Length: 343
Image (cartoon, rainbow, N blue to C red):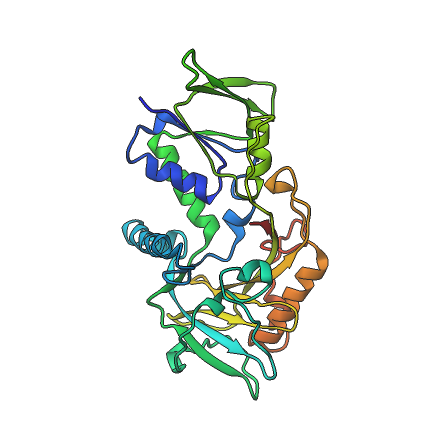
């Protein structure tokens, strides 16, 4: 019987375990993650924006498959309630005198451009397509990118937690915090086992393995080097740290949800309204050293202040509503959903 070890418990790892459990016994699937807290980086704190067609042609079919599978999963398990899945009207917002960045869309993230640059066709904005929470000013412009048929939003942390719950119910073995210490072969030089060590104690164990999947994102090069020391494996994965902020929407958002793309002088913000009345703001990247663990990432003050200023500028609010927008953790006094995540 096949036994699969999945290294990395983020959205890719947990989704792989979930779908694999439909084809082999859950008890034969082992998910290994080095962090004590799962989904502590982009898997839990990215914007959760989905698009059917916003991809380079090499990835277009995969993008469509992923979008349709998200919709199918949400319909089957009430994703609207459990992980805030909803179709989203997507618009491009141009401030007066702002100049869209020149980007082909393929490398928009690293170039500091807008994800919406890959969409060439724009439409006219009608009442339903104008976000009620967006602060409009004289001379600005709003264009329709998607009417809600091909874009959607969700809370990635809630989705990951749902998939984790389903995996555990199916019998998938979750090992964390744990790291792969070595990979072993049998007398025929074929993969036989994976030896893991739990980092919160001195315990080790051997897991029978006929397949290994490495789903560690930005950590893939270092993980593979530790698993296969001295190998010549070269994985062209470069980490990029992105800051994000979640605020409460001070106004009623109704039953239509909006995603807004825009361009500022030095970054291209992305703003997503979720069904629970929260608004996610992101788009500020930073050059940070990749920490050994996802839980080790620390937000920087300057990018977060930039996002707060963006919220003040672009979200319609009056008086002290501005200060009530911030989602605070009462224990620490810091933003509960202030986050730096590596992609």
